[in-house]
Length: 497
Ligand SMILES: Cc1cc2nc3c(=O)[nH]c(=O)nc-3n(C[C@H](O)[C@H](O)[C@H](O)COP(=O)(O)OP(=O)(O)OC[C@H]3O[C@@H](n4cnc5c(N)ncnc54)[C@H](O)[C@@H]3O)c2cc1C
Image (cartoon, rainbow, N blue to C red; front, top):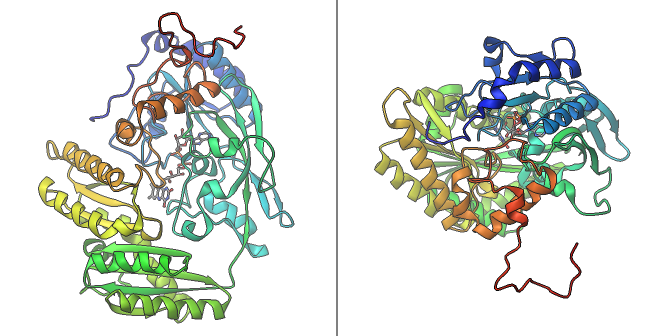
């Protein structure tokens, strides 16, 4: 464990019995878990190298209960960590020894579906896939589709601004959430956005989506639902070099085509996936691109032909278009199995997440290859190539001394490289604890101060999800402090209160 968390507050831990009793008054029955063995089910999220038993777990069922929990914790100076389904890969839902873990899994109802307005109002514990399941009979779906969609919650998707294969064309969570109810740390209930695309006032939805549980607890979400496309077809394109594949990705987008999905796998990922699900991927290529288009059949046929031409010009050595739905799903089956398949190659791996400009794909993938040799750790690449969102899987063995540390250092170098070539630290998995200490690589001190001022506006006592996202949290009073040089206050003509 190389990432340091804030030291637990012994005084809070000493008050545990009183905290548990107060929570039981708010959430009766089985809504509070304080048995250390039962709490082990919550001791980590998807970043499993980091574990911590929470102080106590609360499972509220209503907004009023969430509000009362947060209000009580605010009044009594107790920290809170929000949790959805616990699938985060960046440690955002990692519990703390001195914090109440508030789990939203009982908020599992679809509250309203309005096909006229094309919206669904759901509770945050509803899984991503359950939103589509609730509207698919009427021919609709919810577009953002993280691979974890069977398990991850909409609340967690909002907090992480989750993405997926189809976000290239249909946008990330932030482009598909219209409104939300959030409970602030002092218990206040705030409704932001609404059912319209452009609600009045400041864009607080834009602030809350991607805020990683640092600003408030999401208790209701209004999402856009879309009519299901008439058809979808996919192309499976093989390349002799990763450079050719990277160039093809950039050329397709440059030609004005926005595919529904465009995913790239390198040789280790292709071989792992093929051995796992046997879908007929070519094994003599260095890179495989899956490009999907959707819409009316005539449009799909036209786009398939255009992409085929671009692929050949980019040096493709094989190109197969799906002829029916079964074949299309077969193309995707390998991609979807790539992560579990990588688990067969190595006892442990970490999945990195960074984004780069598409044009830099070949160069960045080559440099990752060089790092792999330098660190002596294998890497497989499976990623959302269309939006430049990389997911290198760094393989290691946690049983071997020093390998976790080496894998983390390798991952940090990849993220530094992403920033160096004009990209960003995260594509969809968030910062959490995993990338927290790299924030200064991307943001200046001034940038970070401004982001922290926003945090202070929502959570002035810094009780909500501490230790995450910011490498160092300044007390809010420090951020508000004015620098006075030789007695000269800035803007002396303005009245001061
Ligand atoms: C196999 C696998 C594949 C994955 N594939 C993808 C992918 O394709 N795309 C992608 O984007 N992600 C992916 N992920 C990561 C993860 O599923 C997403 O980040 C997801 O959005 C997390 O949702 P969750 O409900 O599990 O949230 P959690 O892990 O419980 O929490 C995540 C963060 O959200 C906060 N949070 C949770 N609920 C609330 C709430 N109601 N209010 C306020 N804050 C809250 C937590 O404090 C934490 O900071 C994958 C994970 C796994 C394990």
